[in-house]
Every structure is written in C-alpha cells, then in structure tokens.
Image 1 (cartoon, rainbow, N blue to C red):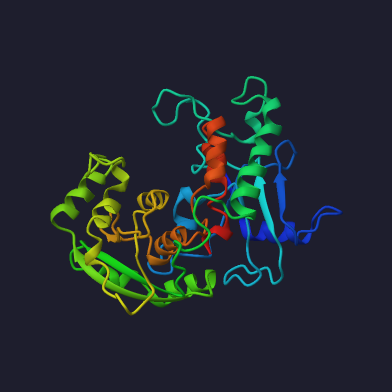
Image 2 (cartoon, helix red, strand yellow; image 1 turned 30 degrees about the vertical axis):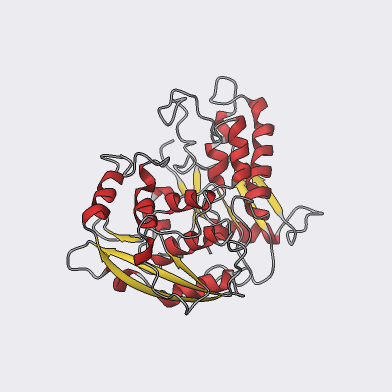
Amino acid sequence: MTDNHHIDAPTVERWLADHPPAGVDTRQNTIFFVNWYGRPDFKFHVYTKTDEPDPDTGFNFGVETQSRKLIAGGGTTPDDEENGLGRLRRVWFYDLSAGPESWTDNWNVDDADLDGDDVPDYRMPPIWEYTKGGFRAPSALSGDLGKVARYVGVNLLFTTSPSYSPSLTPPDLPHTVNIDSNTYEAIPGVNASRRYIKPGLLLQELSELQPTTRFSYDNQDLPLTGQAQQCYDLWLPAQDVPCYPDLDYPAFANLFLFNALNLERTQDDAGRVADELATADSLLGAAKAAFRGHRYLAASFLAKSAYDQVRKGARQAGVPVVGSTDGWQVDEPGSDAAAAAKLEDATTIDHLGPRSHRLRD
C-alpha cells in the first residue's frame, strides 16, 4: 500500500440510509457490511469525520490524529448539529475493505501477541488478509461478521449494554444533579478551567441525553502538589506504578483512587441538590469504580498535558464520564462484548463501536 484515501463517513451513512436494498427499512436498526475490495476501481481508504472539533479547545481530532480515522460509522440523529439526517434513520456500517487503521490494531498482521502477555491476540484484519496464507482463513469471515453484528451492532449500539445500572444508584433517583468539577491547575500561566471548560455547553449536552434531570455545574481549582502530584507521576507511562499498591487497581486508576479517598473536599453543595457528582478525566479508572459500587467519579479534568496544548476539553471528557455513572453506554465496550473476549481476545470487536457518531453526541 503506497497511498490511502479519506472518505467522509457521514456522507456515506446518509447515502446508505437513503439507498437501501429492496425490502430493507433503514428506520429500523440496520447494519451494512461493505466490501469494495476486488473491484477494478478499488482504492485503499479510511473514513473520516472532520466537522466536529473539540468545542473547548478547538483541536480537530478527525483531521489531526490517525487514531480517529475510521473503518465503521453511523448512528447520526435526525437533528444532529453537524450532520443531522433530517429524519429518523438507524444505520451503522462496517467496511471490511477499509483500513488498516490504528484503533482496532488490525494494521498489525505480523505479530500474534499485541500486548506482551505471550498470548496471541484476536483481531479482524482488512478483507484482503482473509485468504489462503493470509493472516486469517477465509472460513473465519462469517463467524467474525456474526460477532460484529451481535457484540457491536446489537449489544453495544442498538440496545443499551448492561455494563452499568440503567438508573442513578438506587434507592435515590434524584431529579437534580450537580456536576462538581475539580480542575488541577498545573500549566504555568494558564487558567485551564476558564480556558478549556465551557460549562454551558457541557450542561446542554448532558440535558439532551437525560432531559428529565436538572443539571447544574460548579468548579474549584486545585493545586497539583503533594500526593496528588505523586499519583499523577506514577501514572505516567514512564513509570506506570500503582499509587496504592495494597488495593486491587492498576496504575491507570491512580488519579481516581486519590480523589476517591479525598472526596470530601470536592462536595460543597450539600442540601442544595439531590445528588452531587464529582467529575473525572481518568475515564478508565472511573469506569472501573462503577463496577465496584462507588457512586462518584472523583479524579478531575487534569490540566497538565504532554502536548504543547490541551487537546480534549470538558465536553469530550465530561459527558462520557458522567454518562457512565448514569447508566449510558458512551465510550467503551459493554459487558457482552467482554463475553466475546472470553471466547477470544476480542480487541477488534470491542473497538469497532466506540468511534461511531452516536456514541460521541
């Protein structure tokens, strides 16, 4: 492969929604499997969505990062701000002939073990690798597509995954929720909470997803010093060391654990709201805590970056975090996708869904 082409994913979704095969009603949940490979006009390609830069920072992940190039997409709502279809269509497509791309690791057809645990890792390569002598046998294709349809299409996208409780933690089902943001200010000369967080936009997005709840927002700035600094430094890839080795959490949970164990300093609205939710940027640690029964997500929008600028702002970080606590499946694969991983390490299956437009709105 010497070059690659970019195709606009929302345009393809719209065309598929408006031109289904005979007998297919795209107002109902619909999966399209696409294969362009083998035609004389085939060109190597990936899909893009480039019209939704981060609203807080302005950084355009769809343009600037390879990790946001796609081989699947869909789920756009009728009234989506950027690409609204104008009428209800429930379409998701997966292009077997697109890629390779980074998010699913399907570019790597040379190394059986991707994560260094000495166990071969399952992945679905591009369609041209399903051949005699290729990475995957042709006979495996039907089974692989069956897994995609079930674990991504049905379980993750079309119906809510049972990973999280479908309601706020019972017995309390509050109608008012305060988003208590805590920002560690660690960039010299930059007020990160003021520069990179737009509270109005965050509340608007949350209200669209859960219109029966009245959300409010407040923020306090915290210094990145002492044990907070230590847990952050240990979390970085250069060290990757758990901050609390006696607890059953890996290093990526360091920020969550520190804040969870110091939660009292974040909650300052007692008696004024029915529920107070401390926000988090350490999404993986926070999500793991949800499985352990914690009501809160306690790290923060960590304003210290390895880049010259902060790239991901409060909406892209905050909406998935709050949503995972409120029972929305927003960013990572659900428990039934994990069931697939019991059969094989379903890295590719798990990661086909989260980049779909539906999951990011």
